[in-house]
Length: 487
Ligand code: DUC
Ligand code: ZN
Ligand code: ZN
Image (cartoon, rainbow, N blue to C red):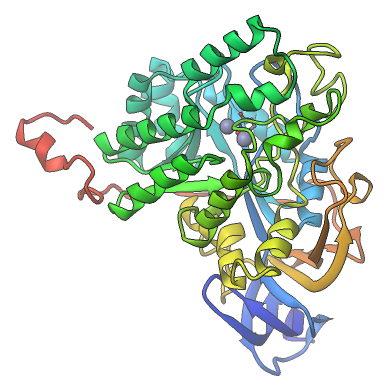
């Protein structure tokens, strides 16, 4: 009998820190040995001329989720996870989204009912907290964090989702006490609606005005405010889908002061611009997402943020709304920019785009690519070292990349349930040939190899309580000095 279930031979292995030649042996779904000339496997894969990387972790995607205006995403947990797998991912973290008045428990139950029978790769959920009621803050959220739902998103904009600064302080200090991570959609709602109202009364309704209403200043102001609120209560905070240069700078400044502030950006801010929102007719609707793509200088600033360590996480923010009446045009065939469903797809193209334009063009090292697409998300969201690396005892989650595979992206070749991709016609070099999750070959020969529902839900644990302040956050000792347990 072979000592291993699977041996991958002769590949170039890369983690977030090292690149080396090694065989990888897998037993019972985990990496059992790394080395040269390892013993036999039941199955052997020849990885010569290929790269063996940790499977991608897409830490921000909307799957089988109703928007605040009750539009259902085009992807369910089957099509979403299949598409993610074909793009090199072995784990994803969709949202279990609370709408106002809903119980968080119920929201989590529904997410499990939707994901369990369908997901083909491993998954965990971030919560979305839109209604921090007494019951949610006093009972449900602390209990759910303890049970392993250790990250949640809040919104500073959208009428049906936004919370006030005061509620944000409540949420942040609760996250601090219970060892959870708060994620924030940082845009100033009043600024956006003030501009939008003026645009609409002057008859400016086309998709491109979405990009004007969502000013970069709305994003940078809210980002700075969110950072200051987190600092006030000494809590960690991750700002999602950053697109504005000054918002990136705010994150960088905070990190330079030693604060536990993290940043995420997405492909749409590297590969799309405001000009895409100004395409013929209603085509611009395909590119309406929030925050919107910025101008060329904005794109350059986001690339810089990826290379200089401002951003730790690179996620798709896959929010799939089709270019039809079920999605972008749910409010009618010619909606104003205010009524176009917000979001772009990108689960399957996230890693190939960044590999090709980042690693391939010399902007990012292979190790930085691994950190941004897998390892850092695993660390920030409590999945490391089970996920996000290639090490003995870690899950055998591997994407075996052909760095020379040139492909032109078309919607036809993708596996999501969308009817367009924003990246149609772009040619990339590098795509995974084989994708392995817990030792199971999920994708090979451009074919799905596993059954529906074979993905697993991932348990997480909260961070232990801390007694020290971070960086120059408002020092806890100052609060204690006047005897108040403020945070
Ligand atoms: N926020 C997201 O996180 N995704 C899609 C749209 C949005 O506003
Ligand atoms: Zn958002
Ligand atoms: Zn999102």
